[in-house]
Image (tube, rainbow, N blue to C red; front, side, top):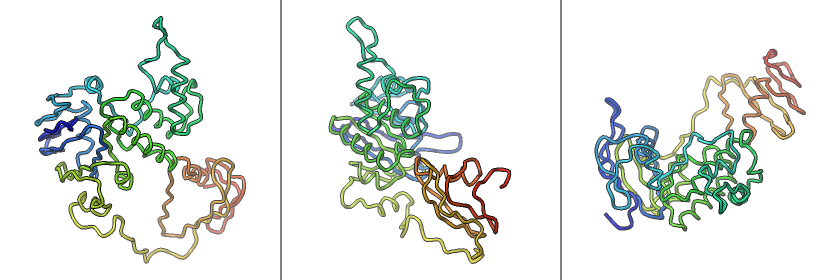
Length: 331
C-alpha cells in the first residue's frame, strides 16, 4: 500500500442470493485524484459504490481508508470518515431554501451561537454563482428545475469539503453549459486535495475529467488505466464489452417495411418560452426518436403532440387532417 492511497479496495466480494455482484475486486484510489469507474449495466459499479458509502455491507475482502482497515456499516459512519455521495436520485429538501439545502448542518453561527442566516445566504449565493445560477438562495427550492436541484445537491457535497466525494451520474440532468461548470468545479476540488470518485456512462466526460479509470465487467475487475494518450474511447468500449467493437452504435439499416406515406407532419410549431419553429415528419411504420437534455424542449413538444399544451404558431398534420390546435379528445 502506497502513502498516496486514500482508499484501498482489496478482494471485495458481494452476492445477492445466487447472483454474485462483485468477485474479488481490488484496486486503489489515490489522494487528490479524480478516479472514474466505468462498466455496462450490471458490471457492479452501483454495488461497489454502495459498499464504500455504507449502504450495503460486503461479504468478504477489505476496505482500507487512510491506512486503516474499516467496515462501513452505515452512511452516517461514512460521513464521519469524510466520505459523501451525490446520488443520481436527488436527496434535496423541498421545504427548505437553497441555502439551507447547501448547508443543512447550519455551520454559520454568531458569537452567541445563533444561526447567522445572512452569512449562510451570502455564501450560498457565491456557490450558486459558480454554476451561473441567479436565484434567491433564501427561497424554497420547490419550483426549481431538476437541473437546478441537482446542482444544489452537488454544491452541498462541495461545501462540506469531504475527503472523498462520490459522484453518481452527476450530469444526467444537466445541459451542456451546466456540465462545463461542473467540470471546472471538479478540477478546482482536485487542486484543493479532495478526492473524487466519478461514475458516469458518458465516456467523453470520463476522458476529459479523470486521472485514472477503473473498468468493471460482470462483477469482475478488468483493470485500472492511466488517462493518457493510450486511453481512447474505442479502447474503453472494448474493455467494457470484452471484445473489439468497431462502432459504439452501429448504423441501423432502414426497414424495408417502412412506408413513404406521411403519417405526421409538424410545420413551424412554436410556443413562447417552450419550443421554436419545430419541423419534422413521421412516416407510417417508422420509429422516430426525439432526444434532448432538460430544457431543450423535447418534453414540451411531447406535451403539444398529446394535446396537453397549445402552441402559438404553425400547424400539425395527421394523415390528411390539418390542426392548428390539438386536444386529447381529438387524438
